[in-house]
Image (tube, rainbow, N blue to C red; front, side, top):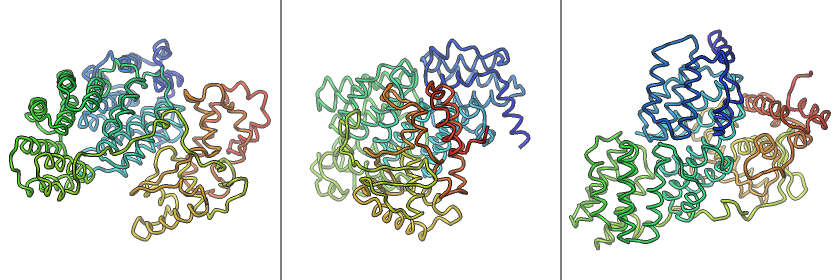
Length: 593
């Protein structure tokens, strides 16, 4: 504890203004570039700030960041926060370059970072980025640790929320949702919705915007939603980022064109040229995207171009076992498209290798592609044995109105969690809730718009219990009863596999309005209520009377109070509503002053 305390005190003396960190986290580079690190920052801190700005402007590559981190490590120093910061910067860039082993090595420094929830903004920012990188790493390789990844992402989001870094929250949600949907092929439609909602939290002037638009485009292409991909590519300005994801835009545009033009020679040639260009600029991540493009060309029977495009990738060593399975399957598809009579036993054995490494949904997708190939070759019976016929259908077609219009909403639902107890009104009448139903609804509201893992939901309901068959059955019962209690709005509580979700579109939720007042997004403009006005309706803090000893909620309450106190410093309406705000602060748990 003493070491952690000295580290935190050291971080506070580094001369890095909290507003500088928030400007960097928000991608407001003009504001950050003109900010002095202070006389006590030292050359290492100044170099890190310059590297952050240069990286987001596309003026610094991974090699430069690795060299900077090595210099900081070699020079030592009394403050480990500087070394953690360098590790976070390298891990983040490795992730964007699809360099999973590099991200894992850099994120290993996370083990040294204390878990103090009241850490300075700099430590919260650095720790949140390391947690985010580690969370993404856990989704790759053999037997992906989805539960551990989601837990780390939640911790990262909590760090960013405590530090007043909403754009970092949005980036975490978009990257997590996209990775789960594309790599694990889990809950594709739900993850698309989470990513779209999170992207709306970042303004067009942020340095994060072009990267997130590129990620959304990749996600849309993978989900089979070409209109959404085209919208993301059209609205997002071209990124100067040298990262693989930022540089993948030409490939995505070519993939959309090839999809719309079928087997047009021009479209096929453009896709091949874009993929070759990307892999030349970035051999590691670019080669992975090159293989994805080649697989797409096989889907439209362009086996000659696909073979030429993929040959350099086949000669490279596999990154991990999953990459090896992908390549071997691609080789089998090439043999099929060349007219070779590949035995069904060989094909099914290749598919089983996906299940062996924990990627069951990728196994299903690969089976569909193989069935498509077999169907084109006249092997209809074999295609049927793989469980599908004909072309692969789109996984999801997200409605246009999710990007700015309005969905058919369930109205007349009013939820209050910023109160002593959770309360729900349906069409003006109070809805009776069991204690477990209220706690589950509170957990869903806190997680929104992200999904809530069933394991996390069970942990909130029964923190002392063991996760087993009985607990799963009990959770099913609680979900069912909550839906019944919510009446016509009960369908908003969804469950797909091991994930719970809340479709609260059209609902009036006090915590959502408080979040918008604390962290106004680009769509809220000046029309929303001020923080002081929103606080006038606050009478408690996350059901503090109903759930007084819940440790998870205690941390969330502290983070909310800290965010409100920071927000009031910049709210001009605070002076005119001083007494109402004082009452709200007391209800939130602020000490008398």
